[in-house]
Length: 106
Image 1: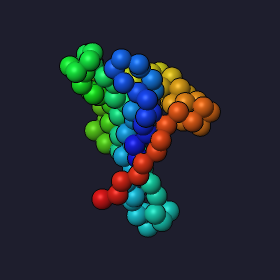
Image 2 (image 1 turned 135 degrees about the vertical axis):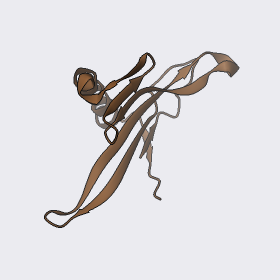
Image 3 (image 1 turned 120 degrees about the vertical axis):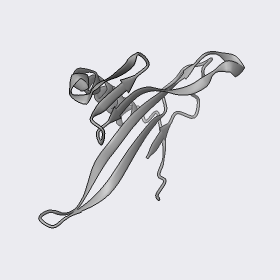
Image 4 (image 1 turned 180 degrees about the vertical axis):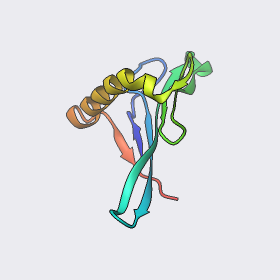
């Protein structure tokens, strides 16, 4: 799932693009269930023609790690930042409807 603010740019700012990967698992006890593999929040680094879309926050649930611009830490150490990020993301996506959502399947 890709969440994009069509007006987001390095010059104007806006709401960061977000990518969420979901995978379907079949469980004999509970049937089909979806799980979140990762959530990545991107931002532009640089300005003008030199700006590049880069991972700013990456919550990798499969690997159990949290990556950010300053390095990599175990995911459990990112609980606080995840809660803040999630509250903001829900407010932006559900509250003010800042994103256009696209789904891509494999």
